[in-house]
Length: 358
Ligand code: PMP
Image 1 (spheres, helix red, strand yellow):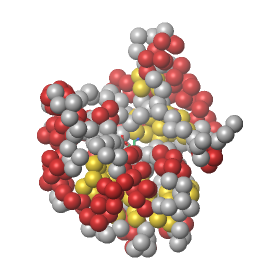
Image 2 (tube, rainbow, N blue to C red):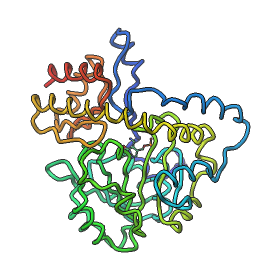
Image 3 (cartoon, helix red, strand yellow):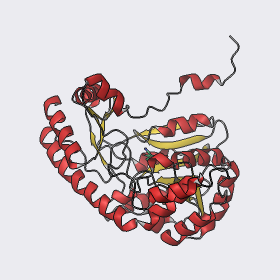
């Protein structure tokens, strides 16, 4: 058969989303299954978001503002940076893709820790770059000195996921300072801070506050997690203006939808409620971690809205055991299982499943 697509894509894994809850409930013959697999928050839309979306939809026959002016101004104000440094996109995963496009030619290298966010290898392969995966430390975190050593003259991009998905571990200010000082000026460092709002340990730097002025640092944030907009697809990044201009050149036109822009503005108006909700997630994270450690002492401390069970080769079996009890988690066979923090009732159901599975 004539090949129409790139041969190197044959080896690329597809992105696997969390299993569908309705499918599992049907399969088990139960009223409702519980999904703790995609790091969503369990609360529903923030106050004002549904109304803002409904109002935006009345203009659905028009293209959205491609400059995203109102939202960028608002984010600039909120985060204390100038609007020309902000780029929004269809989820932060799309922005990560645009960053790779804006920095890498085929054969260039992207360095990241592994295991980390499963989109990184897909994004790298998408632009024909080589993924340089630096194994996590024994404590499941980034090995920043080894990442620094992995940088070559082909490296264009380094991704630091802080806190790290799926292990929930974080790098501290002193080690990140040291690392950033060793990265060459012509290598862009992306601080992927998708879970920043759940961080409680103040030795973990806020990338925007700590490194926002460094010319080769880009901070990536999402509104999918703490801000509860996963389904509307909105993320943003903060870069130096020249880097932001280059990224805008490779954006898919109009990819921050009308509805996403309206929803993000409404969500930003509800920040007090976001903080309250994050507080609930954080309290549950600590409770779940403590309960799990009685079953599995090696559960690392998490600074995100999920916990990591380093189960190695038992990961798939544990995931299947939870599913058979109506709870969907995210196993990474050979490494561990990631479990999102849900409502107290959902977490109790998971803990009961874990107790029988472990
Ligand atoms: N970065 C990290 C570390 C993530 O875990 C995720 C979502 N799983 C994303 C980026 C992408 O989020 P979104 O595209 O929904 O903004």
